[in-house]
Length: 399
Image (cartoon, rainbow, N blue to C red; front, side, top):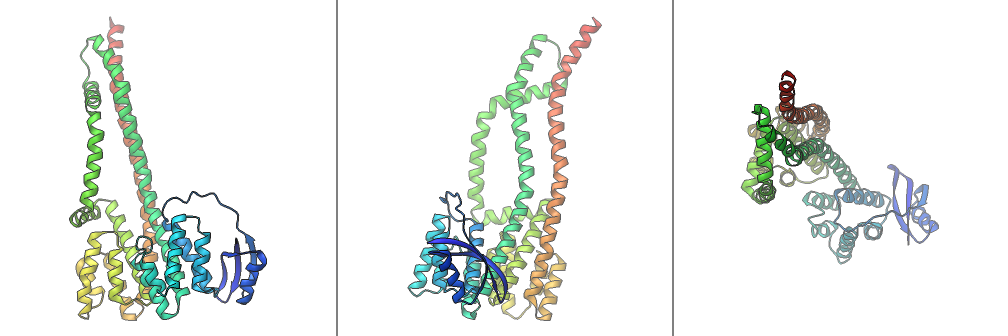
């Protein structure tokens, strides 16, 4: 069997993807049987991949997009799974898809088969697939899922990119300073001791810091490792997540960014679920558990009981004060107009742009601040080390 990359024209428009067949002619026959016009069909080039780890979020996104294209093209579900399991580069993911195929062949629904692998296909994924199977619109649901996952992955990437730069600068600053303290400053200390003159205060401060660093660095590294381990253990508990997530929402600059990300994720997830036919209570429960922040999760879960009593989503959300007032008002308008799903997606699109702006602003703010910090710190050390030299030179010159 060979894998071919195709571009076809369907009633829904042009579609691209991959199909497995014994030859190019056999691949063309698959589309001809479905009365689908083939625009291009090429053999897929071999790609170098280790495929040793578990599937990434990107693997799931690609799988969903290809699966949606195949289902829309009219291929049977089992055949789609067979093709995707054989062409997936990641070996573990290929085995997972093969297991899903096997369960479907034995009589499980596609959604139930996916639920056997919760680490790869979460509740959001399996519940949307179930809604698609029940409603006979699996291809539409899969396309929504693919679009949702692509946007969620892009949002996650934006936030990561905002954190990587400052983390890299701070790490470099720490490495440079520790190197100076351990290997460079001691040579100056030896020279100053031989001079026998009183040292300026900045020089004495740097020498003391160097002495403490050399003396205690062997304890700092193990303590940092233990501290990191204890923090992870604490954050793994319910109370730890509440404390840490609550604190993160209050951190200047970063707290605002985290809230914007949470709003975008909540509205995108809820909007996608409602548009796919998932009941509102079940949708809120799934959305809360995929929020990524315990404070927001708790707030969303707490409004479910009020909604069961007949209240709208906007009413209890307004009392919780977890989202900006504008978001709550737009949700209220969406509920009144009977178009809550489309309104939620509009809010998500708006906050995706807000996250973009916040990330750009954060980068613009942190870049000069961190560079200034690094420059001032290293500059202070250099000046402190040369002050006694300048003093000795002036004394020698005056003598």
